[in-house]
Structures are given as structure tokens and as C-alpha cells.
Length: 81
Image 1 (cartoon, rainbow, N blue to C red):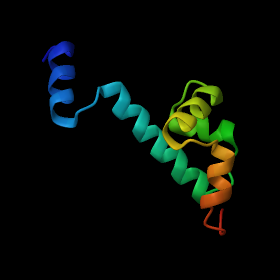
Image 2: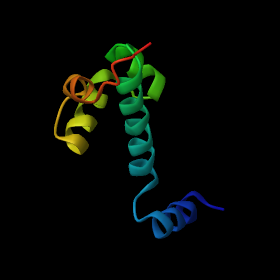
Image 3: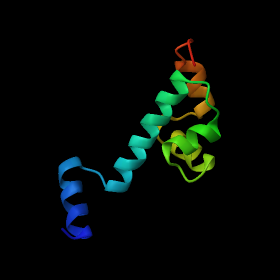
């Protein structure tokens, strides 16, 4: 299957581009790590496959209207490891 065909079929099935889907998956992983661990932003950036902590922060603000730090403060499980 060509790359173009894959992207068309992926968009038809999900309603979003492959790049958008990957970014959302990385963001969900980052949110889980913020809730469940004490990892710092740089460690989370690396664990989730973001190019930089700036790109993680930018995407976070775009989809959650807040920063990773604010998200952790509001959603922390309290028993982080």
C-alpha cells in the first residue's frame, strides 16, 4: 500500500490525520505519566517520543488549555512513584 493510500484510508476510518492521531496518543501517555509518576517534563518528553519539552507543552496547551504542571497539580493520584 502506498503512503498516500494509507493516509487516505486512515483519515477515512478515524476522521483525523495519522500525525494528529499519533500526537494525541503521545499526549494521552504524557497525561498518564503526569498523573501516576514523579517524572519531570524532560523525562516524560523522552518517554512519549516528543521532539522537545517545548513541543509537549505546546500540544498540551492546544488540547487541554493548560500546562503539564497545572494538569499534574489538578489530576495527580497522590500516590505517585
